[in-house]
Image (cartoon, rainbow, N blue to C red):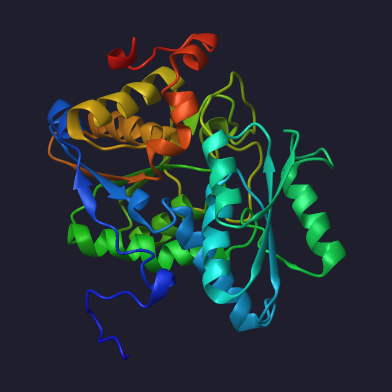
Length: 333
């Protein structure tokens, strides 16, 4: 069967990645007098924005010959990239070995095992430590001759976002966009979207959203990689400048505390029916801060990275939140 261009049929799983809608966030827009739009990346087949990076890196590896039929993909991940890589691997006949810190949510651990990943859990250690999950994944790939996806420093990641996510946002807004804000793990989404938007409109503001415990806010503001505090968010925040982030056209940064993140997660759930994870909550809180800085009448776009179900045992667990001195969802108290 030949699928016609622009039809509503997707050619397998990979054909369903991308093309997500922009959703107007009513409360945030009303509170700021701006139009705040969230790119619904939780609607990708693997449930997150990382499906795009996974597909882009695998496509590029196939094209270069780094990944051959029947091969193995190895990656160190906080979870979502591992899910995307495993699903694309399943669809294309590869094996996926996923290395993940054991501190990540049980929901992501269970999901990776469910979809057939060869999951290796390791203690959470800093990047400089040889036991860090990224470094462990690199060693496994080198020792077995597998393809190491290397999402943090593989710039096919940001190129995928430049060609798809950024292009979609420009098209969906009709070029009416004043700012884009996004948190960074690998830096691929922020860098790729920023590059795409700046190519069309150089004065669009690209703003990094950063949680406590990450060094990127200070890096943008002062040029120094310094950090303090901690966050319960997963998969975002960074203590180094990755290859994907290097050279990214970033104009400013906003620091978002966990309390502000949770406020957005809970409000969007109960008042707008949008079920989002912590990184999306940080992105929305940052978009609101940017909107207030710009003033009424502007359009700000952000990324709704993934859904809340992957963090039920943390974000929606009053006992866990109390242990971190954070507020629980009002309807659960």
